[in-house]
Image (cartoon, rainbow, N blue to C red; front, top):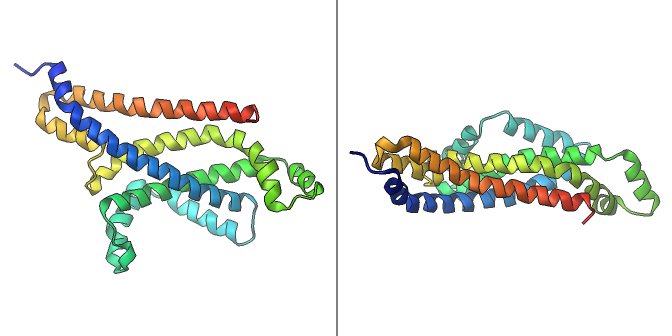
Length: 223
């Protein structure tokens, strides 16, 4: 007679919670670093600088045109084998680097698209008020672009959270990996364990979506 569902859930929950903590740390770091890098590159690309914009465009095409798993393997296996000392990082660092760069490629495109969507007359009006380029960007362009940027960022961040499940291939015991280990303990309860894992992911992603919606409403009110 198989163990009851409640007993299985109680048994695997500590391990799944430990995996969730690891997922939280990795995804939060990826979001922060990837967003910062993406914002910087997006602002530069959005202003159509002569040499910088095409270079950033090439960066985006390479990253968005290759699977995240390949990027993770490069960060974990290829770069440390180059012999460069500061590239000899552990699995956690490799995962953070890969997730951050992966996220930055999407944030860059979203930010640059939001900036380009602001009418050119807004730039001209800001310049007419004696603002320089960066003042115009800070006080006039970005506040308007923010309303266009936030909805798309929500999808990027949720995709990043789900992408953390892939980092288990380099030895990180995040939520999905803990679920797989739990299934080895209770092979007759695969559906139950994966259902719990899915519910935990949802409990993480749903508040993130709601937080972005709240920020979007504040931006729409000019807060």
